[in-house]
Image (cartoon, rainbow, N blue to C red; front, side, top):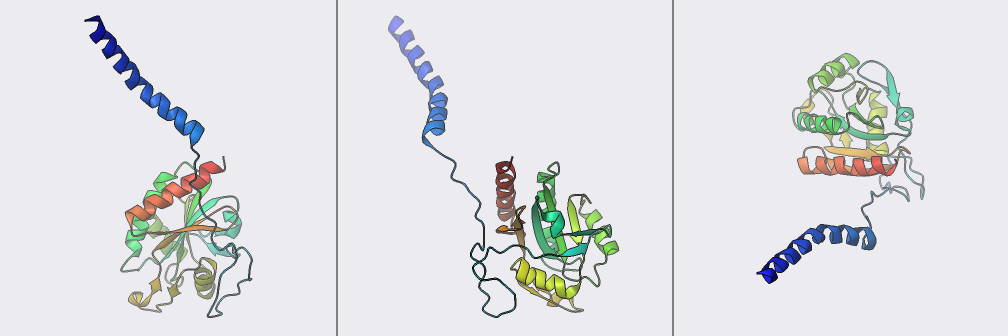
Length: 222
């Protein structure tokens, strides 16, 4: 009888020791190797000569300053020192934009209390998407005006910024919303203006990865 009790006691001790041994192993024999790459460190190839890239130099987002939904000026100056998540859209988009904006709501919710994370949604139809129109669209999606900025800028500069700055496809559709061509990607940009990743804004798993990698960038700085 004593032997049975001793055996049970030893089994219980072994079970209780397993979590401790795992923690000690992870602490002493493993390291966190999850890192977020810096894209375009050696510059960007430009086979069609559409952009003025500097060869062999780290690519950063070029200078811009657009109007937000409250008519304030927002751009690269406000990106410095902060993590910025960027997408290109337009309010009359009949296809992927509503899904992208709904997914971006999840991104906002994940970082609502983090002042060092912000969102830029840049309109590809600036003539129609005035600050007033963008303000109404922002309200529909519950955008915090100090967190999620909907931006309107000159058309030519906007398309150059999409193609040459954020390295995303963008084709002007003119008066027909169905003729616009743009990416569904959310772009993760660090506080130095460097692109750190692209994520599908129409795919829940892609947005989950964006949220995770944004947290890694954010907490790695603290």
